Amino acid sequence: MLYTHKHFGFRTGATFERRKALTPMDTDDPFGPAQTISTGAVTVPVELMLKTKGNSCFYATIGGYYSRNLLAKQNKELCGLSHLGLSESEMGWQWSLGVRIAGFYIEGNNRYGLTPVYTSGPTIYNRTTCCTLGIYF
Image 1 (cartoon, rainbow, N blue to C red):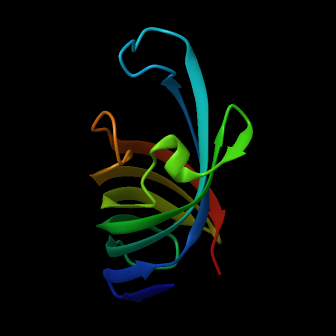
Image 2 (image 1 turned 180 degrees about the vertical axis):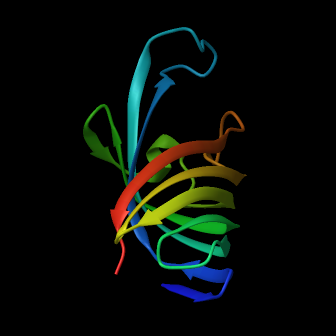
C-alpha cells in the first residue's frame, strides 16, 4: 500500500522472500567446508517516503521491517529452523532510493537487521543490499 500527499508518503506491504547463504559447517573453523542454508520468509516493511512531484518521480524511503521465517533448507534438504539454530523472526531498519517512470519502477534497498540471525552460536546480523524492478498501479 502506498499513500502519498505531494512530496511525502507512507508505504507498507508484504513480500515473500527467498534467502540463501553459504555458512561454515563448523563454527569453530570458519575457513572449513561450507554448507548452503536457504530460508523462505514473509517480510512486512513500514516506511516513510520523500518524493518529487508527479507520477514519474524520484523517491527515498526510510523505515523498519519485520520478517517471519517460514521454512529452512540445509543443502537442499528441508529441515526445521530450530535444527539450524535460526531465529523465527527478524526486525531491523531499511532505506531505499528509487525512480518511477511510466508505470515501472527500479529501486535499490539497504537492510540492517537489529536481531540476530541465529538463536545460538555466533552473533550474526543480517545486512542486505538488493535491487528491485517492478510495475506499480
